[in-house]
Image (cartoon, rainbow, N blue to C red; front, side):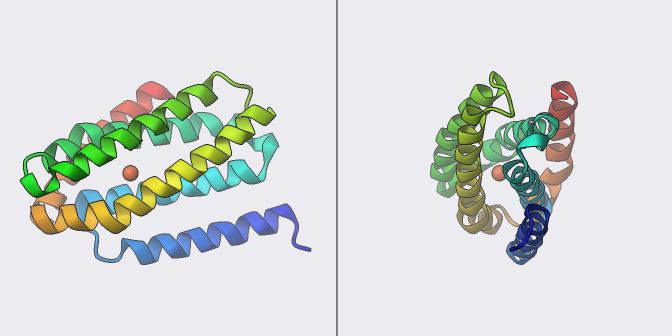
Length: 171
Ligand SMILES: [Fe+2]
């Protein structure tokens, strides 16, 4: 029987492997966003595996997810709206982003070691997983194909600066 730490490490390794495979082909801001997905996923797996670590990990998880979402909404999806064939993807993303932030706000009002928090953590993981699959398999490749590699690269420093600012104000 593997102990919880071994399980966590093997899950983490699996996640890192998956992330690497998914990153193939994405450049600029899309590559940066996909890397953040991997980092958030690893933190969430650790929090799920260890109740005692949740209080310690939660501020970082919350700040990372909020910075990612706010950075996307401020610097990436408005650019999607400049291209008629990408507008529907921006609309679709916006609806789901609000569900994610509602769950984060609910968890923020709870005790991280409690059962209710644990149930919402499972829900958050499901939402983040759906967000990651949708963006990395559908939204990012299409966005990159339509706007081109040069534009995707140009957006990267702007996204990084906004996400950093949001994260600092949240921690
Ligand atoms: Fe994302």
